[in-house]
Length: 220
Image (cartoon, rainbow, N blue to C red; front, side):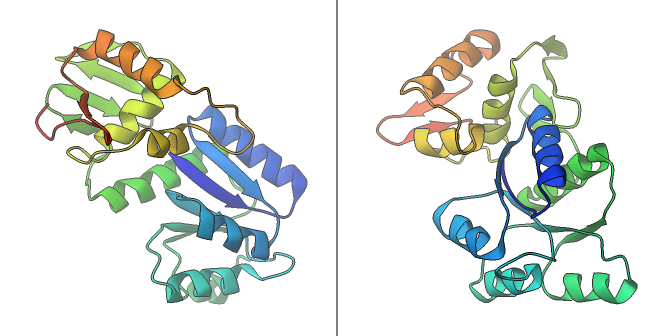
């Protein structure tokens, strides 16, 4: 899943980006409100992590503009402003959650997973598609009750497909889920991971829709 982190403090931004990448997320990081708006207009993100005290354009203005456009992306505010009035203002402006600095990276990752879960309409933490079970929190995968070992990118790809079973995702869309800015993407990288997943999960689990992309049927 691909996240946009908007944080002007270099130390905090680097720490959050690194921590979330280690948790399996693709993370793009910008340091001001104007650049954040440009990134949101030109890239598809699954969640926005937004600081409030930003240069060039304040976080609440970015959020208000985003909601005026009708964007439904989940927004988690990350800020040092801990007053109740500030939290109320952020939530009323359209944020879905609010986390006060300093925070624990494990809690941040858990809150991101919760937002993604609500966005997809899943009540529980585990994704189940047929006999396949995926736990985004622990990165555990099982098929027919048997544990399956996946690489980080294999996990990210099957997670993206199973989060929306029945929906066809193009190769470009899958690449966007797997890689952030500055990460080199080889021309056949998605096909390589699809091949590896089919070998581990069964040849028919991931289906190719010719000329469109890949999908996992709702009842695989």
